[in-house]
Image (tube, rainbow, N blue to C red):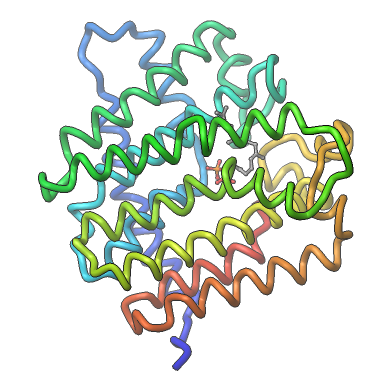
Length: 299
Ligand code: GRG
């Protein structure tokens, strides 16, 4: 039976979880004096900026949906957000997307300089694994969590997807190729967020598979919406420069399918995401609400 959804309830709950995530991110980046002040400042500038915290919230909601404790999943949630922040800092660099605005303010290399931005990204990537290794509980899940996150962030997923996006294969663009890029570039980190939540909750295989599949559908819905926002969103609300995809002739969902068909595809992905967590019952109600929000988001 479909789970009843109340978005305002979920919003209140997400605000609470977000406060806990932000406090932990703040704590984990209060680095000792051995860390140069400029580096610490640049890391915190990008990491603590006003983002949606989608991925860490998914870690926590997946833990809860699988019967685990939120407190056990905070380190994994922060590790994923650190990797996400590093990828945004590096993606914004002149050698990649060359962007001036991120999360409503100057990008890291604009605020500091290119070398500092590269190093702040490197430091967030490595700090993510330090936090995961030192603070994950239960302790017997540390190795598995590190393996899962490193794989998702590595050459066959996040980094590989970015390379394919930057250096497209020759030949006609196809939906299959576009989905393959995004499954790795955007989808892998979203999917692993849910799987990490399930792992720290010591979830049964069936529950772990259900949240992983939810993550795959959600990742697709998220990417289509991201492309739609780039094509027709409001820059002031989204907090970054829009219309870039078209300017750079990038392969996108609206470019390939048109706006209406892209919206319809995102709606199908949301429905599929919700269906996969149906079996988890009430404990997955916030995951269901988040899936609906994803396709309707304005930022
Ligand atoms: C540099 C290895 C490397 C990877 C970069 C993150 C990324 C891969 C590219 C960013 C470009 C982009 C538009 C990606 C698609 C979706 C995405 C990751 C959007 C940003 O994530 P949000 O909307 O951002 O969750 P906030 O700021 O809310 O956390």
